[in-house]
Structure formats: C-alpha cells, structure tokens
Amino acid sequence: MKKASFTQMKDGTKKDYLLLKKHEKDFERRTADRILKFMFKLNNTLEGYQISRLEHSLQTATRAFKNGESEEMVVAALLHDIGDEFAPMNHSQYAAAVLRPYVSEKTHWIVENMGYFKLTIPQII
Image (tube, rainbow, N blue to C red; front, side, top):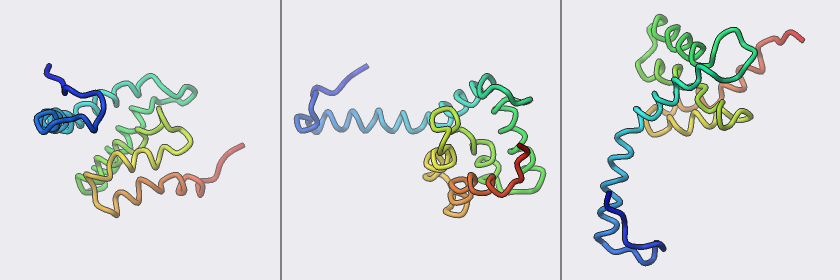
C-alpha cells in the first residue's frame, strides 16, 4: 500500500494529501462493516447478565422495528450500547458520537441522553 512521504503534517505535499484523502474515503466507506464486526464481539462481554450485550442490542432493535419505528431509530436501538466496551461510564455519549453523522438531531439526542432515562427506572438493591 502506498504511504505518504512525510512524518510531520507540515511536510506533506499535494500528492500526499490526495493519497490520504483516497484512503480516508475508503476507510469511511467501511465504517458499517467495522461496526458490525465489533457488534459480534459483544457476545462475550459484561459478565453477570443473563443475556449478552449483543442479544440485548438485537432485542432492543427488534422492539423498535416491531413498534414501527423508523429505520434510523432501529439502527440507533441496535447500536445504543456500543460504547459499553470502551466507555462504560459514559457509553451513551460514545454511541451518540458514533451515530451523529448519520442520524437526525432528535435521534442523536435520544441516544446521547439514554443514560438519564435509566436513572428513572426503579432499582432493586
């Protein structure tokens, strides 16, 4: 694979930046594939629950689909917990940041603030 000729951004040429732009576009196009690949890894994470994070995500998306929600909301439901692996204390914001370029402001807000909705659910201690 061709690589840019510079090690410091200030030394890049037009040719370098055109090459990088091509690679970046290819990388962006494969975002959905990388996310789906990552989702399958959620089958073996967050011990203690009766179902895996993947199963939870699939259940959530299925409920949204059966409820007649938009395709955007179904995808958001599927991906709402992808931040658990890397940002367990603020996974809502992580997931919202990943989805932001692809969803409406409303859907982004719902995902970003889902952690607050969990606070209203009674907890058994």
